[in-house]
Amino acid sequence: MKTRKLLTTAIAFIAISITIIMSCKGIDEITEDFDIEISNNILTQEAIITIEDIVNPEKLDGNNKLTVEVLGTDSDNFVTNSGENISKLKVVNGNIALAVNPNKASSTPLKVLLRVSGEDYLTTTIPLEMFPDDTLVTQSINIVNKLNTVQGIDFIENNKSLSNNTIDNNYTIITPKTKASTKTEITVEAGTVFQDINGNDITGDNLKSEVAHFSLDTPESIASFPGGLKPLSVTDENGDEIEDSAFLTAGFTSIDMFVGDKEVKNFSKPISVSMEIPNDYINPETGNNIEVGDEIKIWSYNDEGEWSFHKTGTVTMNSDGNYNITFTTTHLSWYNLDYHYWGVCNYGRKLTVSIPQVPNLSDNFYQLSYEVVYASNNQVISRRDIQVSKTRDNANGYKNTPNQSLKIKVYYGRYYDSNRKLLYTSEEFDGCSSNIVTIDANSLASLTTPLVKNINIQFQARCGDKILNPFLYLWRQESYTYYGRTYSSWRIVGYIYNGRGFIYGAKIGVSQKYGTIYNGEVYFYDYTFNSDNIVIDDFEAPGDLCSRLP
Image (cartoon, rainbow, N blue to C red; front, top):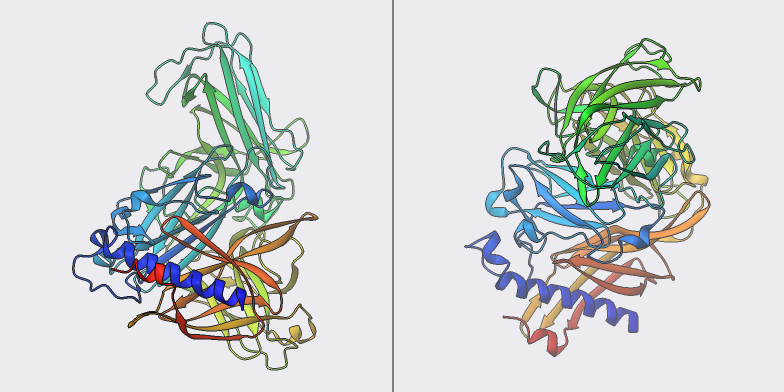
């Protein structure tokens, strides 16, 4: 009974906290004419963004490890999940929870860019698009820990002494090819003067360089692509802003330099950047292996999270026998070798992955995941979790698929687990269509898994004659294996809405750590489920909590 009381007290505490906050400082920022209800379900369009540090998940614990800014003309349409001004948004345990202001809901999609940064991390961006019919949007993206990168990413930091604010000899920086099979090489010519973002010369006696090279070796490397492979918009070679676009990358790199504590953004002379391409890379425009003379466009990334055309590069063979593109630049940013495709078909199209129920499944359900990939080279565009169940159909989807030939790959296990097993690969389909890909899951009937169940919850707490019907999302600390090591991180696993809800994939008879995030704070509790149906309809909240109600 102790864990049951802990669970119910935690939910009651959160519900009361929400009521208090919305009755005083939060409510004036989201509405002037809503009645205060204990059910607290004012916000009807929410987004939860998960930031992944796959090999260092504990580094993201707390609410002060990363900072987030919300950029774009639609940013004023959003609030925190406690109804506060979006400027107060926090990253808590690697998660960002925000919502559309109900006073500023829109009949057209709302688009913002979240810029996330932190000590020892490369700054990255996350595009968020909320359609009018969206109630909950979830996304995840990898952030690069410079001290310990995932497989497929090499990071190097070098220091170079300066004389009279410049270098006396040509200076070369090369990523080491320890975790990535390809490399970036940068050459700075002797006599180059380093400049800030406004073109002013920087004075100092030391140049610090930070270079991260991203190969195509692992999905985790590609998932670190800033802004994702489906950016909100790009600026093409004609200077036109193109929306509904997609990238198919051949590799990308991040370059940062500092003189003292000042960031270098420009140079008095062009620097040379060389990026290797995998020798087995398939040119999506020809369907053949890449070869010398092929052309790939080069894109640069600015501080506002926007990709712009830099120039067109030509594939050559370097002295190591690897395909390579070399180009020059006078400014620093991320650089990306990419084939770019723009939407010429129905905006708002949706891919739906459907898994019908399998009545002869040996257990209640299995946890699966799937990837949306380019058919030409299996490059991952998006990853999602999904379940196959004994008793109900399951489906979820992905909006605005690229206008290319695509495939779906289904795995047994969650998308972040390196031990997951490939179960199914779909036929190719046209991304320009609204597709439904139905998975035949009958072959899964013989699979076995620990006893896990979806938990049905009915919850109601009382403060005298007041009834609390909370609305909140629930998280669980889950373990996963990555290249032989086991890690744990927080994942959204369910919700309570108006006193009813679900928790997905609970281990029956096993204590697990649950939590919820609200107003930049995390509330934790341990709980053991012994049944898949929990009814708590008579919980009297403690008096000290009830006394805080308005």
